[in-house]
Length: 140
Image (cartoon, rainbow, N blue to C red):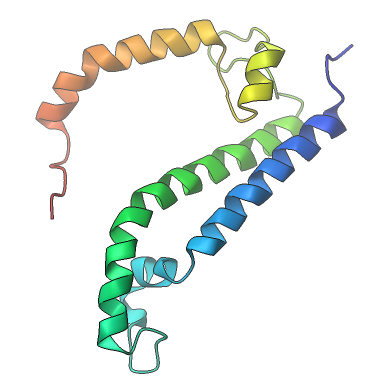
């Protein structure tokens, strides 16, 4: 028998996803410019150049936050898919059940603590290489 009712889990993930989406919506306007640079026509909401400058400043800050929120929204949506397919709560790496406390804290996780730890250690070892061969970071 499963430790937690599927409906209960689904409700929690959906609520979490809803709050992430709300935060993204509150960050508002900036999304339009970021993803559609061509949208800055005369009739755009940012037709006033002074306003555009202010938005730009906010945008720099909010862009990083927004990227994180978008990533989290995607992971939560994927968690809902796994829930539907009956794969939720199972580690993608080793196939063992993920600890309920871990799922409660981060309903979108796909790995157990042990595998996550291995992945992170590996990532730290690979980082210097990634820096050498990765894309140059965009500095303004």
